[in-house]
Image (cartoon, rainbow, N blue to C red):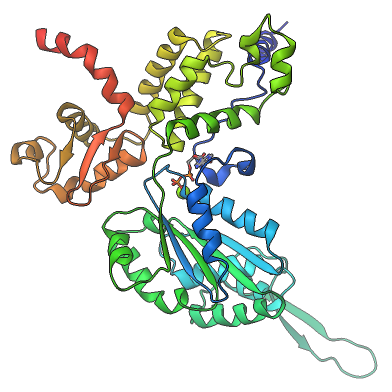
Length: 429
Ligand SMILES: Nc1ncnc2c1ncn2[C@@H]1O[C@H](COP(=O)(O)OP(=O)(O)O)[C@@H](O)[C@H]1O
Ligand SMILES: [Mg+2]
């Protein structure tokens, strides 16, 4: 047997013991294909959304919350729910690319859902996007006499952005609304833009957001979106804030994720069949009841953290060939998670300076930062290190604290925990 075959067999064995076909976790909802099966909680927010959707006039909704809290998952769940439950509805979604205005994004999203519409496909083609039809400029030169000697010349047209995206969108919307009662468009990741850019995008899109299509937008509550929520501008009919999930909901979510990868289903009935070995028939197996709870605590209600930590822990346990995630294996898994988090590619020395400073201080805010501290990370003002802090949040190394007054950053809880036992040793040195 080759090494590969042997290793493969070992790996197969451990997954068999776990009663899993694969590691079921996923960091981002964009890639999730079976979201419907794992989506948990958010009942109140879903209820509010459904309530608003009862009105005849189109409305716009902003879903906001921190990275990994579940914004993309939420809008995907809403769109697929609408598809299932409403007749004559068209739903479209798109991730906002840098340097794209909202009208163009909406135009692309809508056109992609209208494959039968020539004009929609023409719009896509012209922008250099894949469509069901290829766009050609056809020139026929007439031939003479009795025999047809003409030739048809075809040249592909160079892509070009629409000159009046809002008008093009309105035109396409007209066509869509001929056969549908409503059009719902989700535009994800408004906040991945530069703050000034996002602000401009929203201002330019006022007409669009108050128009005849429904809009679902996502962003995170940094300076960009906040004014638009609370202020009387009232750009959005419903601002929906996603908060961390409570622990029981996280637990329920963990069970659902594991269930999507079961080799043999675990049901209440199968549990009672084999009282000898109740552990393996546990809904959180290969986690124990205790380590499953602990995982939920460490995730602090942030779905992405639960996915990420769960993933690291199972990867490490598979490597070690551990059939059960007991407390010992769990701790090893967490250590591995810390290493992986800190060792992510793309972090620069300056990122590490800033990270270590936040780890040392516990909380870093624009109100409490000192000049010496800024100097240590080679910056003059707090706003200079803001992009670094936000990058560290994106890398799941820091979290932004939920305060309205100051900009406060704290370490990811997992990294914080590791420090405590080391502290006395550090002082000895
Ligand atoms: N309510 C939920 N139920 C189950 N999984 C969720 C839920 N919310 C988020 N997730 C999962 O957590 C991860 C991060 O969520 P995502 O929607 O990508 O966050 P965001 O868009 O806010 O950054 C994804 O894998 C997603 O599928
Ligand atoms: Mg997202």
